[in-house]
Length: 339
Image (tube, rainbow, N blue to C red; front, side):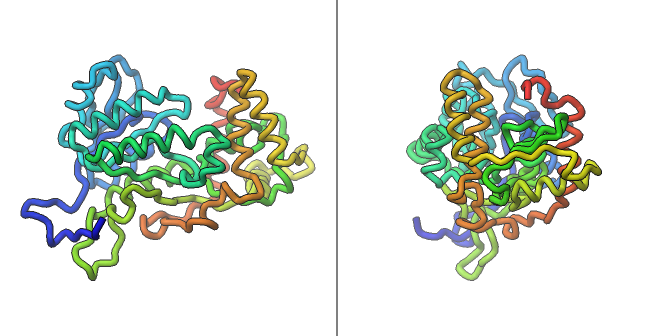
């Protein structure tokens, strides 16, 4: 596709995103995206929610109730929107996202951020190993085939505070038992993002102008990311560096903790076996351990570079978010997961 320029567009063309619809506005990541968008003040935000949903939606957000079994309700809710953000759990029914994508096409929504929050979606081998590539690629392909919208995938890595505090099958830490499971030697570095940084990544992305003004305009714009991934991160970090932060935050010493090492590939195979036997925690184990393979799959900064500067993302304080991980664990946030 030839590069388009704003100054060559028809009269009335607006070179910015104004109206944004979001699915999962009250969810784990969605609420942070909404918070930053409202703070930035560049968008009118509409939450798309199911009839009967009890999720708390932030003040200042418009709410439209939909019935996923009634396509017309989805289309009506999305009419006039410039962008659709979809945030759903990894186990959400695939058909739900497909219905949203098709409704967005019917409503003429030009931009979609699909449920692509995670690692490098272009790493086919890693994507296949965690059983997510095929379904996610199918959504992207479907958007392109419908021909009405463009997609942008959000590569942010795992969420740091959630993964650090979420139990031994994520980043390997059990705060209650004071145990750490290190993959390999604990020095494999991966990209990981905090929830607020992910919110900024999405909000600032949609705050970019859509097209460059002319051929001399080299500033970032949304069109540069059309049907591509944007790569953002809070920290490029190893488990040993996480552990050092945990020690600082908790005021403990390494002698207070039991540290074990396991080959990441061995942990992956163990998780795969448990997952195939019906244990859902096995999926978490295979998902996270795969990021620590020696092939560098979890470190997309090394292979793709980061778009942090283009999006104006700040540097964050590691210990601040380690404290948040500890707080989440101590507050009982993860108790319903049984981890």
